Length: 189
Image (tube, rainbow, N blue to C red; front, side):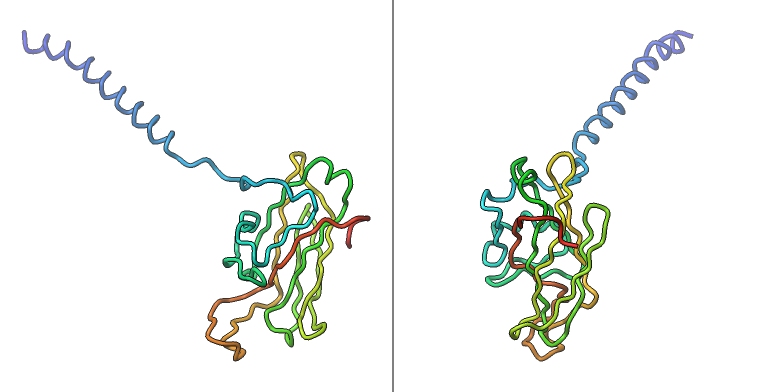
């Protein structure tokens, strides 16, 4: 029976040690988990109200999903992309509209871009003008209470440039974005 008494003294310690180990593992594993990212960390739009995308890779922080690296003339989406912007209180007070300068990859192939923001969809045809298929999509600023706004951009067609004889580029391209700017006046559409 002395073995049984020794076992009874040891088991509570073992149970406590096991329980403590489990709690420690849970705490460590929870602390290593990445927080759920709901929006990127970014500064507000420049005071000028114009954010140049083309040729400015440092502004890729605003292009949060579905974009290829910024090129000298444009940033191309993959057909479904997101832009996050942050506005200062003065910008929210003084501007009601934002313009996104968009273009199609193939000038002879008009496309429609749909921008979803503030719970609404805004459709913009991008057609050939002066040899380039471009449009300035004007949408209302509808920033949330913290000054952030998400713009989800989808296109009616995507293009693989190589299939149109435009070089070896095999990327699937949606719409191009070259500039974002605050516009005076009321909302776009």
